[in-house]
Length: 266
Image 1 (cartoon, rainbow, N blue to C red):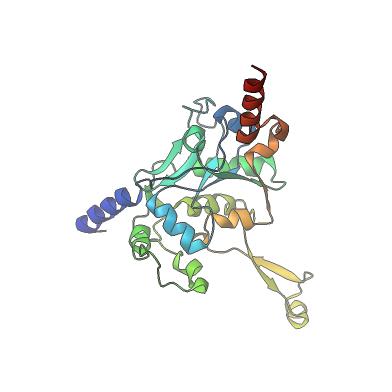
Image 2 (image 1 turned 90 degrees about the vertical axis):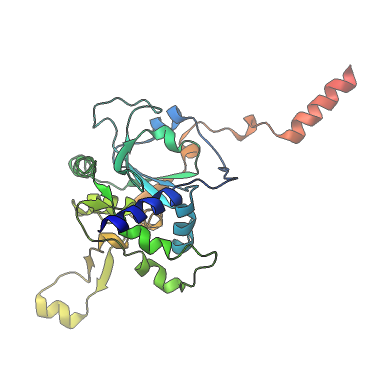
């Protein structure tokens, strides 16, 4: 990438990373409670509040615009939700970095847990991501995304996934879901594999005993919503794992009624 294009890419990265006004999450959760729910290898989906988040959500027709991998204390810096780097992500401006969980405590999120992954493979997934800390973000991806910043991009729905198969292909650069997909593919854990149904003649010709065979999708084709759609990940909302009691919620109309009742007594 030439110096001019690199400079333009950095400017675009800073522009796209700016938060949008009036973003409000539907629900928030205490960071420490959030931390207690996660296990190494979990994928955290985030509804971002930046300009690039809006573009990704439109192109993928999904709520989720970003994904990060929870790594626990593999970096040996503790598990404090506000200070310890326990999430690995690919950031537009800073490349592959580790950040504390508290960064996303005020965002709408989902937790995606790989089903029945064995502990050794889970550790390999986490190590794969941790070993790539410091890699640059693939700025070529920004140039492609920048073309779709129009209010209503003229992009047919069937082309959106293919248009997100972007990037330079440089192994020393990363995109958020590309990094996580590569980590799981390194241990052949499925996300959304392409399933090929084998005809009888083909099975007999090659001696296959299976009716179908799975193909690994190229990592550049993955987007955040794929972890939500994948049947190989258990999806849950943070509050579902806590001692939630709807009767303890304070509703405004009830509080007003109580205030009126108290005032009437006086």
